[in-house]
Image (cartoon, rainbow, N blue to C red; front, side, top):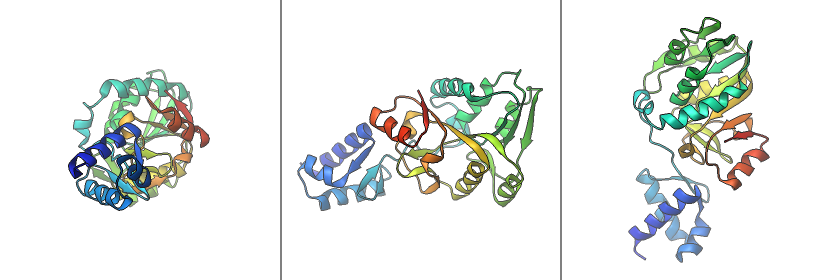
Length: 249
């Protein structure tokens, strides 16, 4: 088997199974583990996979600007947002950070809701402008335009004096073993602080983000309370359930 053909097989298996182990690939493709490790190294350098200890994971969807992401899988994001509405009640303090799925969530909030929303996302704050009974607390900082969220030490320090009943966490990458991760260390620090000041955490995750990993870990996956998603493999769902996470499909 030629190297190019073997690497295409690796990518196909990874796309179907979401995770590969070098020793298993060695057996399945009838080559040495060293050969598989070289393949994984090359594929990682090309940005096609994310190498991890003993194997590789999918890298997830490409990181693009907020405006572009609003038009990607918008129907799916709306469906997830509607499912997440079941966890919202009057008089809650809800912390919502950035993300296009989170923006769809806010658009589903009924005008009759009486609650307090804390956010570092200007688009989300603006989307709540007509909700007369929702108090909106905008957390300041330096605007990170790619994600349209405020970040930095000012954001973290402002959160020190706050406490939320439920944190709606925008997720870039999630893996049941490695945790929840993002490409930016600044976002990781703010999201970690938000998780620390919240009683419960809910994440709405499209299937292309499941079993993927990025460079900066926010927290273990076990810190999630609710995972609202789609098309979860039964074995992967069991892993999340083992962490006592309520999985909603």
